[in-house]
Image 1 (cartoon, rainbow, N blue to C red):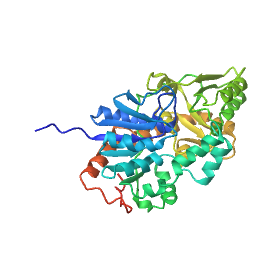
Image 2: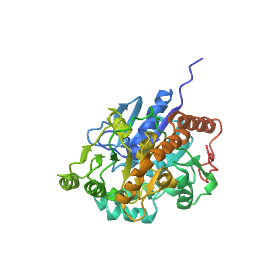
Image 3: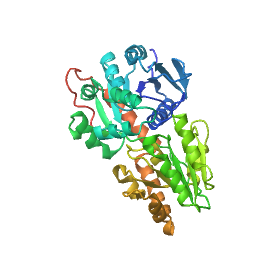
Image 4: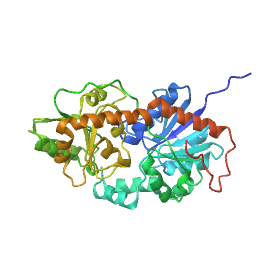
Length: 383
């Protein structure tokens, strides 16, 4: 008898944390893809082509297929060629709808990582990473014609965090009970050894909406504490402005971009840090939050996704990051909150446990016939 082939999975995302594009969606997609490949699944990914990226790349055991960003119609041919058993979108988009139409007999699920309301899109337009035209293009790709209808025809709709379920249901006209939970997996590192001196870190793209200038000014206002900013901007002119603003602040290190898949330098930085600061005006549930908590860092932020910040750090409601940091450092309050955050990640986001949940979902879906695609399916329900 011929040997049964492994489950064939196709991940769909706007990026995969490689080829010059490094964001939270791509980081989660690559973490998941690597873990699946190590479990013996045949893993493919469909993403927009980036500068220097070949149409087919091999990355950490995955096969990555690229299409020109202005030609999403080519996703259909790629989906048919891959012939996957499962298509898993790492956020709803036009790619989700195209793959569904191209491969209706496959099973289709989606994890919503940062569902955006009109207010969220206005914030993006007010402080764009590159340009307002780019924001409008992203808006069309994520929320364009056919995406909402495709969401109602998925075999399973999931949130990356429990606090997003209601928002997802309202946005796509779903019964909230149909929105399950598939957390972002995070590798739990060894017990961290913290720096001897107070160390505050930020991790993420230096986008305008993330307001990295507030981190720089926080470092200026608290000269006795060491600050480290990890990341870079997609806009070279904006990054130049930030570096000029930070010049002369002796306690601030602008460490630049660190590829966590190529080196353990980011883990070493997080293991030493006391507090992770996030100055963004809006977020879903950043992977950087979870990775910092896994390393025993407390979180200081204005956003409080699902109560993560207020439970495991300080949620700043008045923009006063300095006062919030002082509260965390007073009597070593950061240490207990960071330890509680690490325990929370171990219980709810640990890599092997989350990958087990994904694979159990896939196997359950493949054990049943797909529903008719011309009407909303009942979905897979919570995992």
